[in-house]
Image (cartoon, one colour):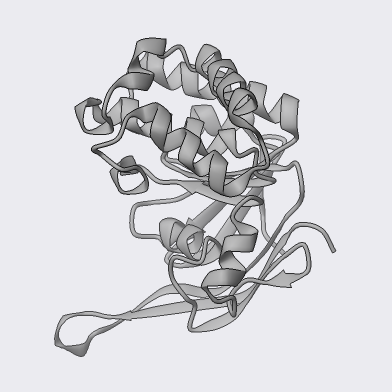
Amino acid sequence: MDGIIVKNLCKTYIGEKGHIHPVLQNVDFQWHPGEFISLIGESGSGKSTLAKMILGIEKPDEGSILMDGTELTTLDFIGWKRQRKQLQGVFQDASGTMNPRRSVYANVEEAMVNLTELNREQRRARIQDLMQQTGLAVRLLDVPVRQLSGGEQRRFALLKAMAIQPKYLILDEATSGLDLVSADSVIQMLRQFRIETNCAFLFITHDLHSAYQLSDRIIRMQQGRLTLEGIQNTIKETM
């Protein structure tokens, strides 16, 4: 079955003095191809941990994550490399996803070389097309990543993920901390990219306004559990 299916996902951290802290508790949900889901909830509720589990950055203690029928939790490095074209993630701290010494263009193109079949001219054309959608100055493509502001780094990390044209894209606080103009640019970019590619988004956010603008569904996480689900702006108890 196509889509990402999360079943009975559990994760517990051991804190100072051996204190046990359950982060995810029996999480179940299905994310359909082309669907835009916003995941909301307080800080520390488990949203980012869930994203890292789906992306293979962390392993669950229990549970299953299927992507188009492939079990993700048991993949080794080579197995994950095969899935990276289909599944990408962008986190609030984007500095770790790009080489700070290299130019923005070199960072974006490197990902495309590794994960697409495009030739040099096609890569350049796709990057230029995405640049037009971001509202960012073209001259920034030649700037080393370390010279960019945090907001610029985040938008270029998003551009890098989009350049690969994944089937599923996870965004963790993509608009947090951005000024209104920059945040609106990101929102418009997501809308256009979805129209052009039918990419599915998991949009982790505290921004309810953006969530309602973009989402097919809104899911709330509380203390490691999915507690409320909204469909077409109507909140209902998850069954």
